[in-house]
Amino acid sequence: MRVVVSAARIIVGLLFVISGLIKLNDPVGFSFKLEEYFSPEVLDLAFLMPFALHIAVLLVIFETLLGVMLLWGYKPKFTVWSLLLMIVFFTFLTFYSAYFNKVTDCGCFGDAIKLTPWESFTKDVILLVLIVVLFLGKKYINTLKLAPTVSLITLVLCCWYAYYVYNHLPVIDFRPYKIGNNITQGMEIPADAPVAIYDYAWKFMVNGQEEIIVTKGDYPTVEGEFMDVETTLVQEGYVPPIHDFTMEREGVDYAEELLNEPLVLLIVSRVIEQADKEALGELQQLATKAKEKGYRVVGLSASSPTQLALYKNEYGLDFDFYFCDLTTVKTIVRSNPGVLELKEGTITQKLHFNDLEDFEFENQGK
Image 1 (cartoon, rainbow, N blue to C red):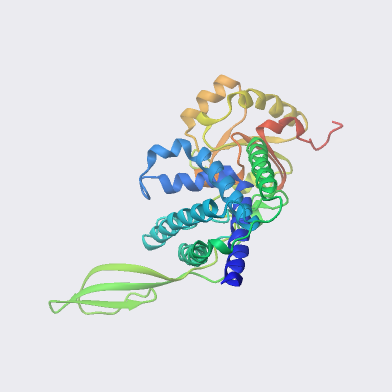
Image 2: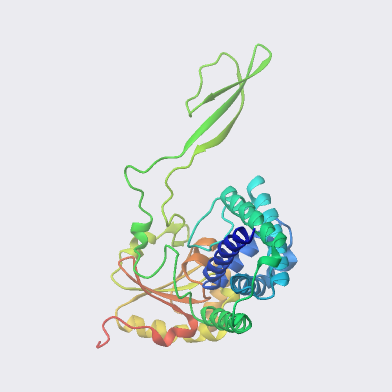
């Protein structure tokens, strides 16, 4: 039993630390996932949505701390009880998401490792079994030296790191819009990429009897009255890393044109009403200097033209905004507003609004 408990302790502890640190690297992204869970379509806990970021930060710090406390054997009773309650809740959540197909990615490992709903549920069931083993074998969890000190240092470092990445950007970017990636290439689909396969269930009324014929898409030859058709995904096709990127203005998508520009300063605000007001006041200075150095300056937002016009007028923003889906804009940069430098569609710089002074212009001497 002692060996089994020790093995479970190491596996559970490391998984909680790894999962916690990945999400701690991007607490804003995890808060978006919580907002998805809190939405009326999933758990219908809309009153928690304004507090999603605070809950996200507390959860990832606590998750990481519990992993360290387990590895060092600090306060085993409290640690194991906390782990058990947490995993029971998340097992229910992942089962609910998988069974009702509510959330397609649980966010357990952020953007670093994508899991399907059923994979997430399976992972949580395995963790639940291991934590039950730890619960039953609490007496075999020995406390290592300096456990209180290590736990305290972990708590302090986690708090500092969460504060840092929130006020800047994730230190490690796991998203398809990281520096060095080309947006155009990220949208390409290889010629030999697998395509999605669907079963089509055609419903006909034949001689007064309902008959269902299943094909892969072809309309069946049936002597009867067509009633309905239902499709079922059998095999997923290839989905490019970037698949919802648009730069629309007045119903026209200018993405291809703008992504071919030699130098673009892209100013991103997912929802301009929620943007940092002081940063909005500083953006025009950056935009003016960028234009002087030969940049094409454009904005990207999910806000309506009416809302954008109000803020453009209030803050003197003399560049055009283009529309993009909110989920995509949230993925591009974790600050509101944020700034990107594009060179023929390749992301060469990405900055939080707190770091605008660090933007390095091409053609510095001009």
